[in-house]
View 1 (tube, helix red, strand yellow):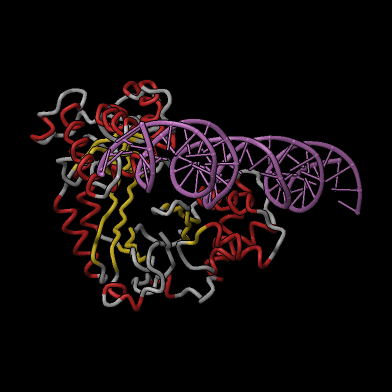
View 2: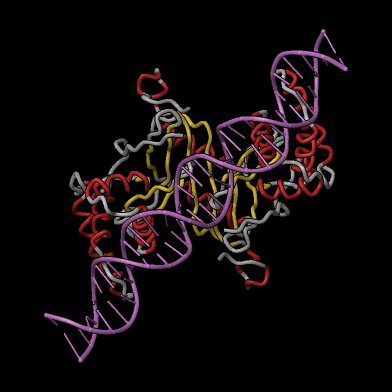
Length: 178
Length: 178
DNA sequence: TGAGATAATGAGAATCGTTATCAATATGGC
DNA sequence: GCCATATTGATAACGATTCTCATTATCTCA
């Protein structure tokens, strides 16, 4: 499945409204957060990490690693694939980014700063990803888990289907699934 | 993450109660279903496919392909990996098996005959997988999707957490996650 | 029953996303 | 600036899965 990014239909949180179009504000916040996180454990900071964080925030949401690599390299051709992977893992560890693995076998990351938990709707026609939150579902999940003796630590809820654009005429869907 | 199989805590459907301990009854049903499915499209049947189907049904649920390969090969050492993959895809296509991809990167299959839709609880301690059904959650999913203009075709709901055995003392969990 | 058409197989190469290796380089504290 | 060491880049390795293609098996029909 091909998945493209589009967060247009999601309601934005107040924090997000403040966001500049290229994510510079969040990038700065993330960089300073990363900075102190690194210092706390005696790690060093690097030019590459800065570029990657800035680029990542400039890309919006649900960024696939290979896309990030391409974009970063257009800015600094010497950055290696390994470094991008390493850095994204680092960002996930310090709570700046969240990894997501949908059904197409590659890891995507979304910015985590100032955002609440949400799940995803994924269009099987055009690959559009829409985020949603639903407390009732979460509550029911916990209840079901408890009734089986489990205590939920995390969950994954993905709804696959066709979006309105794709349903009324294939017009809206530039690329159907293979 | 390491995932092991255990369906003990799940309530069984009447069909399942009838099941013999090694799944022979279902295997027979599956084989004849596969047989007619193949004939309908002018395909041929083979010794390998029979062995694979029988072995698959003998293994219960949530069977990872490499485990299936190992088991099949202990019966017939000449069966190739490719054939097992091919056959499982075939079974999925004709509705005899359902592929599942949890967060450990490998595909598992579960028998599909006479079973209704369900989701999964996965223990992050011991890897136990428990199945559950919840209509309310499904209903809410549809509602949320509709409110975003989507029509759900399929979904994935996985709850990760610690099971009761793993929570009270690590005693029950033979292997913690790496 | 056997020949011909073609589907299925086995072995291994190829793929894809990701991680490991390791020598070279950069960073930060002194 | 020097040194210890964290980070990097290039590339090999990895694990799961699929592809390739020559060989083998299965079906159909005479």
